[in-house]
Amino acid sequence: MKFSFVTLFPNLVKGYFSESILKRAIEDDKIVIDFYNPRDFTTDKHNRVDAPMIGGGAGMLMTPQPLMDTLSKVKEESPHAHIIFLSPVAKRFTQNDAKRLAKKEHVVFVSGRYEGIDERVIEAQADELFSIGDFILTGGELASMVVCDAISRNVDAVLGNSDSLSVESFEESLLEAPSFTKPKNYEGNEVVSEFLKGNHSKI
Image (cartoon, rainbow, N blue to C red; front, side, top):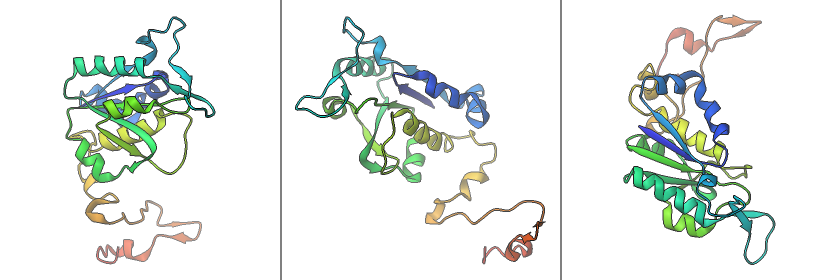
């Protein structure tokens, strides 16, 4: 499966995929990650990708042209790419969304900066919009990485142990039970007795 990040700051994202499970998934060709920087597509003579809001308002918005041209290039190279924008006003991203999107061939994350993205880009290009919560971040990269991580875990063979997925929280609409490891007694704090007895119905 392929993931693309449309971002002004690709290095913010690259580091996350250089360690642990997702690094191995890339090395094993289970997932592919690439990047498109809208600044590479701007026609502004000063290389700008943002402008003041029309009608007033604090801050700057990402302008349409660089993003539209970036996404045109993405679609030229990958006609079936599924384009996702992250926004705090969108519907909440869930585990069911992660499982569904893991079946896609190519998912593209568009990361906003400044005060966001000109709405015309979203209306023209978004296949889906998601929120990861009712709070504001300084940019969309972190939210995109959260969603990408959740999707990646559901891609075949990314996790070494397939049972890890089947017993996780939100599977079968239930939350995962608490977890314990050795020692059974740590400074007087003991593992819950049902776990020691292996009573799975009570667990």
